[in-house]
Image (cartoon, rainbow, N blue to C red; front, top):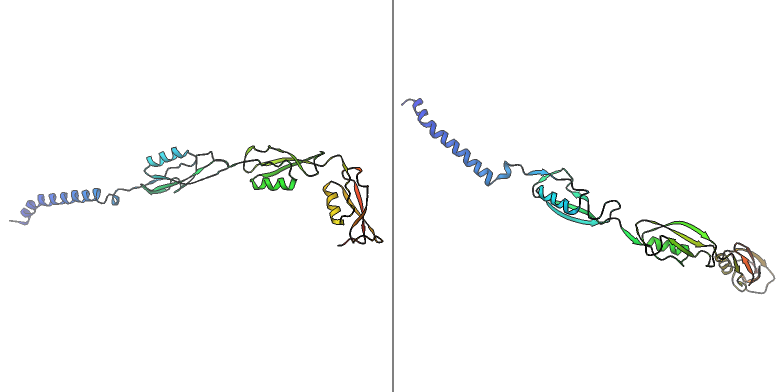
Amino acid sequence: MSWRGVARRSLPFLITGTVGFVIAYLIVAFFIFPATIIPTDIKVPAVIGLTEYNAELLIVRAGFRPKTREKTFHASAAEGTVVRQSPAPKSVEPKGSVVSLDISLGQREEEVPTVVGLTFAQAELALDNAGLDIGQRREIGNEAPRGQVLASDPPAGTRVPVPTAVNVIVSTGPATIEMPDVTGQTASQARSLLEQLGFRAGVKVDSFSTMPLNTVVAQTPAAGKNTKAGTRVVITVSGAVSP
């Protein structure tokens, strides 16, 4: 038999064998090693700005697994919305990968603390501890001691976003104040008291006084006199004023 006859007789077997091999390869490829021929990488959906529920729904539909990573306060994002995601939107990742989400707790809020009755410095510290700022300071004459906070805006107990500036009204003290008696005190003690009451302290020295050094031996205006705030009070000190 010629080689052509052999070829003709063998051709059907060759074709059948080839087809069988191809079918067997495809079966193995599709059912045992599908990832080698079917791409599984897909784009991650953009979910920033969506509610947590809608974001998770979209992620699942796209073939990924959602996971909440953390919840944090955010100045502009509404509570319950996605503020960050990882992997980034539209990046290509394997199907079934985890997409981590950061969820907003909304704007942080705090209660305005009670500052009425405090000194301005104490009020500033209390507001700072609450995460708030000191706003405008307005001063008015009042029977309350000089420097005492009389009111705040917003008032105590109001919940406000952090940070918020809280305005305060501070007393400049009464229009007239009964002059205290500072004789017998040291020069520094007398100065401190007078300045707290809104007076200006001046000092004279009595070199002939027999009182202990730096002791106030006299004052003008005299103790007990109603005196306008801002008045200069001259205290006379024994010996010489220490440095």
